[in-house]
Length: 578
Image (cartoon, rainbow, N blue to C red; front, top):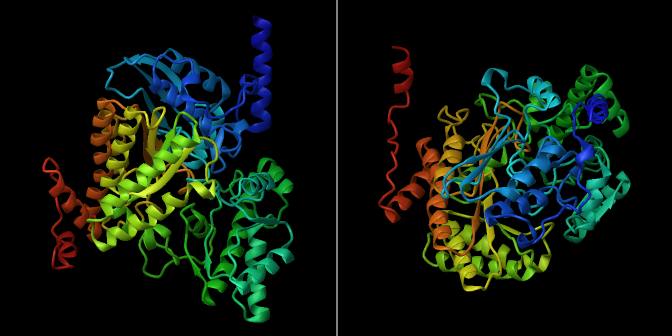
């Protein structure tokens, strides 16, 4: 026994030296990692089995970005911190009863604790660090020690559903590029700059739809687009953005143009200070090219992966004249589009058919489309537009073969739509039209799931964009209103810069056809959306004001404190001046 412990210690010490973290690869299971049908999991409750299914889907190589490192997406968003934790969690879930709750501390299973049948079966927290120590430098130390973990948004809450939710952000690693090409998300790939420019010109000239993946450094491509404009006067890009994982700029989230992929990986380990300097120089070059194309007529926006934030920190010209703390030269797409959609109550609602049968997914697709069509017949034109877009999507999604991993679907819906879809699917399970339970969830990038001043709440201008009450209240409220499991994360993963800049909460809820499941879905989903709409209303958003008023008319038990705008815009200034 002592020899085995010594051997393991040497093995883990080697991992720490080589990777900067102990992954415990010796405990990586040999079985194929994927979402198996729910009845194949050796559990005492289907709630536990549904969590097993979602965990294994998050680690499916077809879904996950770096499955061996337990990373689902975004460069470093983990399901667990090491493989021993995976084994312990699966063991606990196999033993769990409906009077126990699994408690998770940043990937570490504290164990099963007695609770009520109405309680969540799992409570998950990731990266919960004391505020004064919630920084990137502190996180790197804690991650190396294995005491804290970065769960991104839906990785550490077991709710990622593959590229239907979001295709992985830009990177220079060829493996994920080829994966997405094989899965049909990219029509063509090339490592030739000349071929890339040629195909862009051809597609624009013939007005032919084309999704083209370029294997190379994005800065080279931006600078080449500038050169083409200066040489020919032709602007080859009308819309531009950036999805590089700049929440993690110095540990593989961003590869500078000056170095090859191999050189960058070596330098970030051997000389991190020099690597940081080179990354910042690369960001300045990238922004310079983007600014030139923008001045020529390209519309650029920030996706929310902290590109503009890190570019500003690097000294690039992205400052907005007279802008607020969350504003840059270019808007985030939340400020430009999504903020108003969130304020209408619309966000990414998801479900997973635990049977693994495509037929069940087809039935739920039809149910969702029918429900939305019925609701859209009696809504305002602005709301109807949102419904019509999603009805078209859900009617056509099946034929486009969007599924990767579990039999899952995502659409954007408001509060009424989410509740009605969930209840209709639950009834279909009870009737036998859907053969097995369905897990419902959402992205944390939603109406009330996330407080993120540089993305989800970047259009909140009343001074509360940096407050995190909404996400925490969302997590707590979902827990006692019926969620099967809930998660609260410090750090938003793909959304913005590392720990200390985002708080986000998520849930999973199992629909099993019972009246109890229907009650939970109705109560929890109504809260899950209204919490965020009420908060946005409070900040002065007119869309949210109208939305929450309509919601209160539909539900007399809902009473929200409504804002009353001050007419004199200088009143606050005078009050502060005494």
